[in-house]
Structure formats: C-alpha cells, structure tokens
Image (cartoon, rainbow, N blue to C red):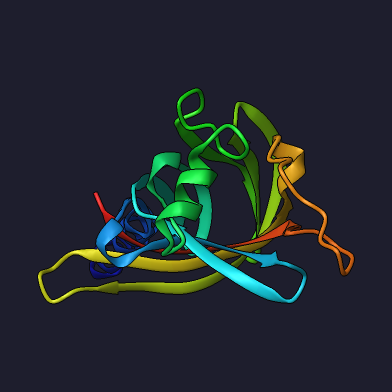
Length: 188
C-alpha cells in the first residue's frame, strides 16, 4: 500500500513537471532588441534597430514549439533621422504601404529556427541560429526565458533594391543584412 502511494506521488510529480516545462511567453520589449547590421560604402557597418515590436513563443524543455513576431517598420532607428526617413520611404521599407514586418516560425531544433519572414509584402523562408540563454524565475515570481536569434538575409529578396554605385567600385549599401534578435520573455 505504501509503495502504491509513493509511486502515485512520483508519477504525479513527473507528469506535473512535464506539463510545467511547456510554457507560453510574451516578449518583454523593455529587455529585448530587434537589430540589424549592413555594410555601408563597402568599408563600414551601419547598425540599426526597431523600437516597436511584439511577439510570443512557446518553449517545451528548451525547444521552441512556436514563435511569432511583428515589427512596426516605422520604428526603424539607425541614430540618423535623415537616413531613417529614407529607410521608411518607397526606396526601402515603404512604410505607407507596408507597415508591418512579420516572422512566423515553421520549425525548430535545439540550435536552428526556420520561419517565414515577410517584408514589403514579400514572404521568404529564413533560417536563423538559436543561442538559448535558458529560463529563470525573477525576483517577482515570474518565469522568464531568454535567447538570441542571428542570421543573414539578402535585402533584395524582399524588394529593398535601392542602391548607388560608388566611384571607387562597389555600392553604397550592401545586399547582405545581418539580423540580431535578442529576446527576453515572460511566461503568461
């Protein structure tokens, strides 16, 4: 009789911990960054970020089960107002017509995530590297998780075609854009 009780308790704990390990998270934008880097004039790098974004994701034992995010293209910030205005214009993001950039995960492993990235109404499959930071309970009793997604896209695949040739050879803006998405989420 005592053995059945112990077995029942242990089974309950194991099932409970398995259920508890899966969690939905909302992106904590005050502790997250959606950024990028792109070559300028072939010799330097411009870094930028988006200030208005949201997202949610599900983790189960450190593996992504789902992830979706939305960025307001108008919130682009490279630190130079004139450049940011040009990036919002039809030459680049054309925010009057395409206000949102979205990403929806389609699959993930421990170290890679694949999903559909939509920019300017054009959707392409993108694979990103995952650097999982882990999960922790914060001082207020909330479960938090953190991770970094990195990868590279060709901006021309998404209709971001504007460029100018430079006299010394090369172009003003590089085609390859490095993505750096640093996320901290709070379990819902």
